[in-house]
Image 1 (cartoon, protein in one colour):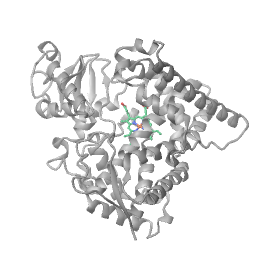
Image 2 (cartoon, helix red, strand yellow):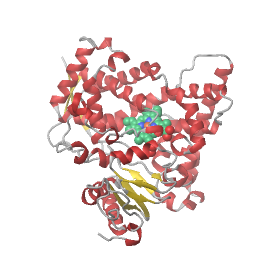
Image 3 (cartoon, protein in one colour):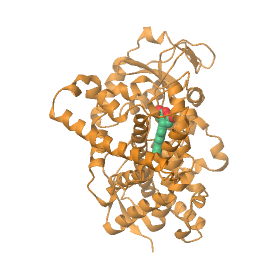
Image 4 (cartoon, protein in one colour):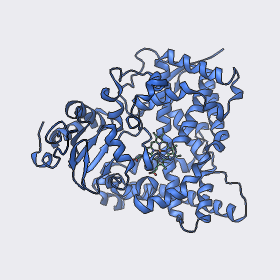
Length: 480
Ligand code: HEM
């Protein structure tokens, strides 16, 4: 380990919570080598090196210092310190690197200035306008149901192993199309669609590190840049036309606000103090897709993986669903979904071991004390969702075991509230968490009542995976 003394000397012990005189530090060379190793082994960096470093250097403190590239980064695992960071979003705003402008022009043009990447008064204004759109997610129940039913029909028709990531991604994009925009993209029907094509093209290219490091590349008159800008135009024209349609609907006195976009437009037009521009509406529409699409699809894929691995968990889920709907899935309602406690525990446990968002980059706007160390103003501080959720210090000896029961009864009360933060927490908590949870529960209830999921031993190991980029299939048999 190369220790940079100059840097560690900045992070001095100030009270007895600190176990060392200065914060433990992973040297810049080690951090960089770890990052490269992971990049080339195909694992989503930097989480694993971070988790290993935490176990070596930060386990007793719940905090340590490392590097993200050349930038010093204080990684925070202790749940009390995470709580302090999450609850004080003015002292700990988002780190600018994680704002879309930090990724260069492509990301800014595509992702824009939405709720997830702004701070302060601008964020307050946007959140105030957008919050009400998420008050009544129950109204989307029929839309969720329609697309889940389609997934199940396709799986039945397939009559063989079902490719999980691909099909779930199609389902979640169709659900978002319908609920956010009122447009069924038909991804599950393999319908060709220029808008979703453009969306996928930009998703896979806008955030590439090459354009962050060398932003001038996006200005060159290359074939690729032309293509990117064409996709951006197709996508933007489409979204702006829907914003205009939503405006017209409101002005014509149609009080049926059917989509998340309609609801944002309603507050936009009714609240003269907190007006969002059309560009801001567009940027948030993109955010809902980016934030809600692959995250939920990956979570559902990990759930099917876990169900296939743990037959006793599958059986318990099945029995609970059957019991709550009194033997007939046609009785299923939103209220009944909320009664499935074992399913809640199962979802929590999956999101503990497989969190889609692994890090949350913040910066200190003043000198602070975390875990007994003085952290100066302007330092990147990063609550590590992955590390805290995998730490035996906060989950005990069986931390690696998949055990939904830890989330039931008295045992659940022993887990620190900020040791489980897949949706973040505090004022910047995920706005779509309820949306995603209802989607997940409805999918699980309908799917598991119909099918038994099987994975052959050794068929796939996602234990250490952070996302489900790799395709995998599960075997299904229909229940009698
Ligand atoms: C499994 C699914 C999901 C996970 C794990 C997830 C996770 C997160 C996390 C961790 C954050 C906070 C990021 C940070 O503070 O650095 C966040 C923010 C956000 N998410 Fe989600 N999300 C999910 C689904 C959704 C869905 C379905 C939507 C919308 C339809 C959504 C909309 C948002 C929005 C708008 C924010 C920004 C909130 C703010 O900063 O005020 N998310 N999400």
